[in-house]
Structure formats: C-alpha cells, structure tokens
Image (cartoon, rainbow, N blue to C red; front, side, top):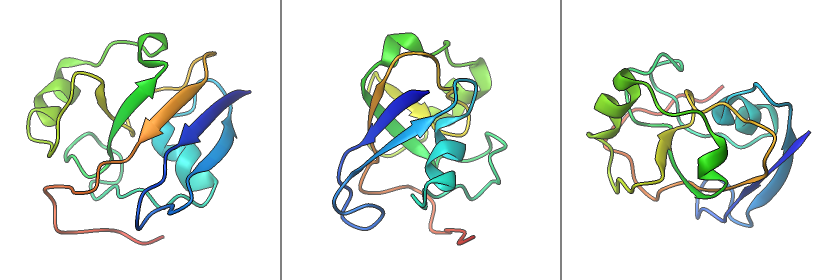
Length: 112
C-alpha cells in the first residue's frame, strides 16, 4: 500500500489526513474512498479541473500526464509544475504528499 498525505485544506480536510491507497488507484478515488470529498464535477472523465491537486512530494513517481489532461490543467486555478488532475493521476509505489488548491475555476461541486 502507498501512503498519501493530504495537507490541510480549510474546507475539505481541515486537519489534513494520511491514507493508504492500492497502487493503480487514482488519487481522486483514493481520497473519496477515505472520506476526502474532493470535487469531481465531470465524474472523473478528464473534462474539468475541479479535482486539480498539487503533488508536493512523489511527483516523479507518477506516470506522465496525457495530452488531454495537460490541456485541461492549462485552465486550472493556481497551476504549478507539479499540478495534476487527481482523477487521472494513478498512485504508484512511492508515497505522495498532496495539496488541494484553495479554489477551482468551476462553481459546481458534486456531493456523493
């Protein structure tokens, strides 16, 4: 199992959280399975940027983003070189430290 450390986010996980994820799982699915309600307005189809995260540690362990994801990331608020869409970033064998940006450009949030 791979450890994912979510840094504190004022609304989504105010105290931060450490979870375990099976390699091959997306960051978004791992978060949702552990009660971290990360936005995913397009139902994880790589059609929006609501699940944008910044990989603070472990970025190099992820497979490279595909062109569709790169195109969507260009629209994300607070884009950084280590930004990924959590619905597309697949967990590998290396632990990750994740920051969920404070804002998204989308005004829709889905609550499951």
